[in-house]
Length: 385
Image 1: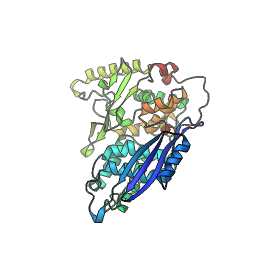
Image 2: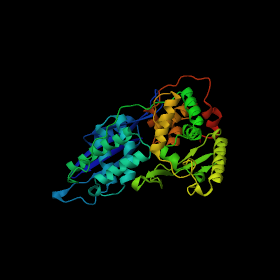
Image 3: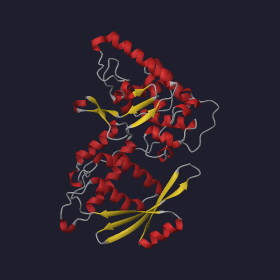
């Protein structure tokens, strides 16, 4: 399938073709490419050479006539028109995939149909704060910032907005650090130390499900379906006014996550132990949210406090220096290693496509005669669906 994109900007037209290049034999991922053309005939001829069925997508670029303010330009419309119409065929294929994911998963769902002129520094900073609360890395947030900066610069050039809303926002200092994937032996060391500190269940849960930290801390027992071995992920911990943490419904990333069979009895035991704690503390236990991983006396754990304790556990376990978010990548690695198809792994972690895995997983995994207990081979048939 090939898509012909017709970009209309006033009286001018340009053309592009977005097309698939099949499966990459080295990565097993589907490759997407794009190419620009001066005329419609050249684009049609290229599609004919591909032997593909043609689809058309028409984009009308908004033009500001004679200095009139474009107060009714929805962000989502402009962002998609600009990205697919101007930006897509000016960047490399892999860059296209990454930025498309940023646009569709993070940026458009947040700003929606807000008018371009209404988007200020405050809204943009809140987007960054929200992504930080959701557990995304500084690298991801920095990529969103760079993408938005380019987009708004184009909007200024087009005359759709008078000032760049990000001109006073400092560039985030991001590193080129690649995620660290723990080995099976390092996973076991971390869990041994975590259990000795009374926190083992949360880390077994994380390595076995791959939820983000904010999602784990917002999880209530009503979100866990023991019968169907499933978790409903639809909430996240949010830092409210004065640093008070609240639980809010997510605007995106709602999903169902399967629970490995071996984790079910451990979760049930954890629930029983929590019930005993409630009985001991009585009215002093804050149980109104019925959280799976609350503070010792109930209530919402602070993500920053959890990260501090986690860093201490990593040091004590004497393993690779990792972040909490690296456990999510380790989970993906373990799933792939026992043979779970990449597209199912992506679904479990709420990635837009399996291409995301390519950025942090090795191209090949070493053969292993033993499988980690957390991800037994029989789980992939019973639980990853």
